[in-house]
Image 1 (spheres, rainbow, N blue to C red):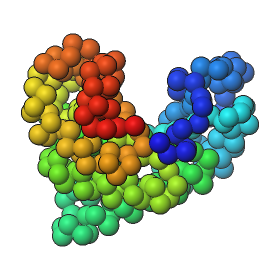
Image 2 (image 1 turned 135 degrees about the vertical axis):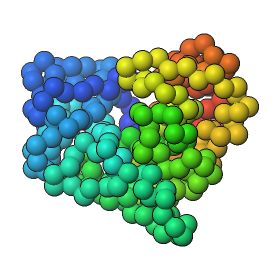
Image 3 (image 1 turned 30 degrees about the vertical axis):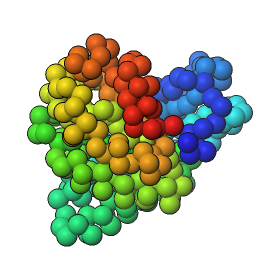
Image 4 (image 1 turned 90 degrees about the vertical axis):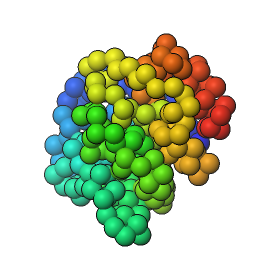
Length: 250
């Protein structure tokens, strides 16, 4: 794994209520089981305030906590004022010729990485590898395309941009959130497709990017009952047998 994600840390990632950690939050961040912090729009006022916040978090302990954010572009970009506005990935996916889309995806990843790292963060939870089936309001324009192969190509360029900018890549939402209508933030979506169908579609971007060094994977809070009764994020079948065993993720 990328060194930015491989520090020996706890397994829990916490969030903060505001722009400055409270005493209670600082205590939780120092706990041995804490591995990182995810920031949201509520934690951001200005570039200077963000640098002060991340610097303070880093000074809390050794090894330093990981600091991350959902900063994909489009409607999922937590820091806006003072940051480059990145288009939705679906807009990049529509560009022609293919070389133009590839370049735009690379540049989006590079800009995101450089801006986040210069403000004291380690990475964004990106790229989105979900297939746009036109069914999921939670995914929608966050997806590059309805074509799994095109997603793999453009997300690969985006990933290279992140890497050249010094940030890790996090593919999400494994094995795929695009086919279900319910939003997994507020419900428990169920995808009734068989594994063979998922392998021909949603798993294609992962199969292409894992050999290229995809640093991390965020599982979907989706149940695929024809594969396992548990949500993917709690499923040894999905995480050990399929992600690590078949796809070779390390």
